[in-house]
Image (tube, rainbow, N blue to C red; front, side, top):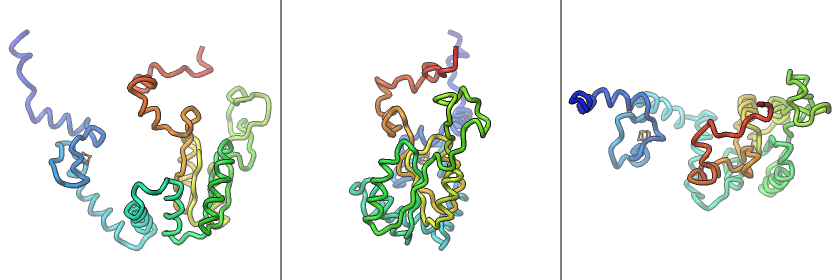
Length: 238
Ligand code: SF4
């Protein structure tokens, strides 16, 4: 081995490399939470103090964003570790002064949404649910080829998160709750909801709507998530 190869990289270069490649998920001290240790060189808090000041002003004002930020923090403070997420959504809605709760539900989770509606009504909230297939627009009508349907040759309505948002907002929802919307459709619903859109559950057809189970089991059963090449192939791939 040549002497040149044994020379350690200059410290400045190492720091610069860290600063560009590492971020919060690589951080061990997590000093931003308690400020009781030392932040790493790549610390996003240290590098974004101007942004922190701007958001501090935003959250301490009287806007909707400020009210949401404080109501969420109050729910955490008052009920930390004692309420389920479902219950937290109801307490949050009441803190926000909501009277009407819109529910954007996956068609495969309508029974769960029915129970959620009962829970919300028991808290004195009015509830209206709009299912993802609302409008009944066939997938072919939005440009998908028929062979991409789960069952080709028959009506198969596309998810319509924009219409879900419109119906719920036109009804006068103060807050919308999404239950099991697909990856991507959840973005469209959130984008088009004119009132705060809160997620109760995300869709995971394989893991019982608990996507983190793939991470919790990634040391053994779901090792494949750490190697993208080992994912199952598309059913259309030869
Ligand atoms: S903001 Fe800084 S201290 Fe906090 S997790 Fe990110 S890198 Fe670590």
